[in-house]
Each structure stands twice: as C-alpha cells, then as structure tokens.
Amino acid sequence: KLKPFPKDFLWGASTSAYQVEGAWNEDGKGPSIQDLKTIPADTSDFKVATDHYHHYKEDVALMAEMGFKTYRFSIAWTRIMPTGDGEVNEKGLAFYSDLIDELIKHDITPLVTVYHFDLPAALEEKGGWKNRATIDAFTRYCEILFKAYGDRVKYWLTINEQNMMILHGAAVLGTGKPDWKDLYQQNHHMMVAQAKVTTACHNLLPDAKIGPAPNIACVYSQTNNPEDVQAAETMAAIRNWLYLDMAVYGEYNALAWAYMEEKGYTPTFEPGDEAILKAAKADFIGFNYYASRTVAASPIDDTASPEAGDQQLAVGEPGVYRGVTNSYLEKTEFGWEIDPAGMRTTANQIYSRYRLPMIITENGLGGIDKLEDGKIHDDYRMDYLSKHIHQVQEAITDGADIFGYCPWSAIDLISTHQGFRKRYGFVYVDRDDFDLKELKRYRKDSFFWYQKVIKTNGED
Ligand code: BGP
Image (cartoon, rainbow, N blue to C red; front, side, top):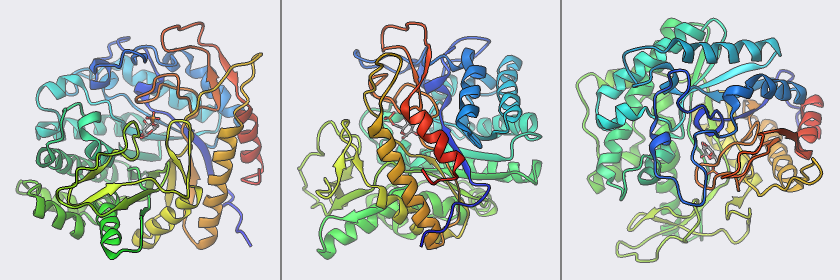
C-alpha cells in the first residue's frame, strides 16, 4: 500500500532567470555568458524569453491559481551585480524583492537558486571559474542575497547542475573541445565556492536551509558483463556521487578521485580548501531528474561516436564508459529517454547514501505544443508527469524523505538548445522563436490537471 504524500508537501515548479525573464539589459542588468553566447540560427536568443520580468505578477497569479506551495526560480547574478563583483544594482535587488513579496502574498514559499548557468560575462572575461577570484565574487554576491532576502527566503539552492556544466562543459561553459584537466579545476573552484556560501548561509541565516541542485540519474549497466557494470559504477561516481559526496561530506568521492588521478585530471588545492570544504554540509538535497542513463564499457581505442543529436547519450570517454540507448525505454520527440521508475531508484540511492531530506528541483517533458482555439492539449506532458509523481510516491513509501516536487517548468520558457520549439510549461506563452506576438499566457490542459494533483495532494 502506498504511503500518502506528506501533509505539507511542497508542490510547485521551476524556472531559471535567463530562460524566462527577458529584459536582458534593463534596469542596470549586466550581460551574462548566456546573453553573449552564439545562438544557433534557427532558435531565438535569450533577450526577451517569455518576458517574465514584466509579467511576473500575472505569472505568480497563475501559479497561485494552480495552487503552488513553492516556486523555484533563479536570481540573475548580473541583475544584482552587473559586472559580477563590486557595484550593487538596487533595481535588480528590488525586482527579486518584489517577486518574493508577490509569492508570499499568495502563500507560495520561495525556493531560490542563486546561480543557474548565467555567469556574469565580465567575470568570464577574467577567466570565469578558472580564476579563483570568481569564488570570492560568488561569495560576496550570495552574502548580499542572504542579507537582502533572508528575512523571507528559507530555502536556498547553490549551483544548478554543476555536474552538467562539467560533463557537457564544452557546450555549457562555451569552452569548445573539452579540456578535462581544466574543467575539473573549474569544478574544484565551484565546489569551494559552494562550500563557502553554504557556511555563509548558516552563519547569516541560522534558520534557513541550503542545498545543491545537481542533475542526478541512476546509471544502468547495458549488460551483466562485469566490465559494463564497472563502467556504470564509474559513471555514477563521476556524474552523481562526486557532487553529492562533496555537498554532504565535503570530500571527493573516492572512485571519482581515482578516475581523475588515472587520467591526470586531479585539481590543485590551495591551502585552506580542504578545511572550507569540510566545514560545509548541505541541509537537504535538491536534484533534477529527467531520465536514467545506460552505459557500456568502452575500450581505450573506442571510436564508436556518441549517438548524434542526442543530448543525453552524447557522453562518454574512451576507456571509461560510453552512453548507450536503453532498449526498454521510450523516448520523447526530442530523443530523451523516459524512465519514471528510474526516478524512484534515483531517490532511493540518494537517500540511502546521505539520509537527508530531498526535493525534486526539475523533472519534465519538453514537447512541441500546439495552440488550438486558445487551448493546448498536452496529454503527453500529463502522462509523463503523472507517472513520475507516482514514482515519487513509491519512493516515499520505500522510506525516502522527499519534501517537494518542482517539475520543469512553471510556465513556458526558452529551452537551453531548442528555443521555443521545445516547451515544458503548464502555461503556454504565445510567441515563436522569431515572432514575439503579444506574449499572451494560456492555460494548458496540464495546468488544470496539475491544479487537481495539488488540490488532492497527489491523487490525480
Ligand atoms: C536542465 C536545466 C534547465 C532546463 C532543462 C531542460 O538541465 O537545468 O535549465 O533547460 O534541463 O533542458 P532543455 O532546455 O535543454 O530541454
């Protein structure tokens, strides 16, 4: 028999600043690396997005209508500090203060990500995460947030998908061909930065809770060949546990470290790093889950190229592991595998390792939505989400401590790679990649469905 969802379960949804806000250069905002990156010719840039910056009251009202208990959003570092450090932009501070007040007015608990892929361009010019000065800039930026919003914000998330920034680092950080040694040094600096702000949060806001938000996925072995199983273990260590062991224990995962040593990727520590890492412990674990991963062993001279056009499978390293298709799973129209049961496995794996409360900070289906007579019949999205919600309940029944579920995304926003062709929201925003229209909001069928899920506390 399934256990019910906890009484005060945090139902909600997520967005990130650069994908939803628009107003990319308004009210003193500085450019981030997302504003300046080269956009593929067939998708929109991030300048207007869904213009949440100007529509936030309307958007929060729609969230309240769905019954959201929480809303996960990110703060654009470049609104608060246009060059990433130094001068504080009061108008930027005021925007999020107003947004937080608006949420609280509607009884929606703010869940704030301090950094979601949008490093200030001015810091990137000085070396970005390669430069240790970025650690100090990030710490100062976060302290400003804690002081400005700590009276109203109880839940904080540090860095969104740090593990994806490293594994897909060339793409996300815009560094071209991966230089793994360099990426793992950047990774180390992000780890130190995360630890510093976790400690700063604990010192400044003793009642607040802070945790990481990596993308965690259980890793299956393609076969029961022990070599494939070992490859899956290694990938899980490199992809998942490296990040969570650090956030919880302040230590490098042993298997991930052994891999880095073997490959010559180990980062350089500065004196004091070890103590900084050790001193910080996450209060909870936020994790994004879209699908599991399946891998096979890979010989050192592996020439099999990753399956083209698939963000999920385009991973691997000769001699370590290679991403493969899981023949048991269906895929979305964008080629992402769908594995609801994998979310239960993932939650249980995390819980058995760390025994900390967990919240799902992203989960969802990107699809091509059609607006017909003011309606969007997104059955595919309801089907995906309902199966995943069921697995959250299974995991709760297994004993995992899960206190919230925030699918991606609260309203339509711009996908990281496919622009407006690929949508995730409960609310449709009427615009195409190159035709802004009036940015009118429409409730999708999934809007009414999710409203009922929340109302019945998970019995959709
Ligand atoms: C996660 C990111 C989000 C979001 C989502 C969907 O990795 O944290 O920012 O975009 O994936 O990905 P996409 O937009 O590529 O479909």
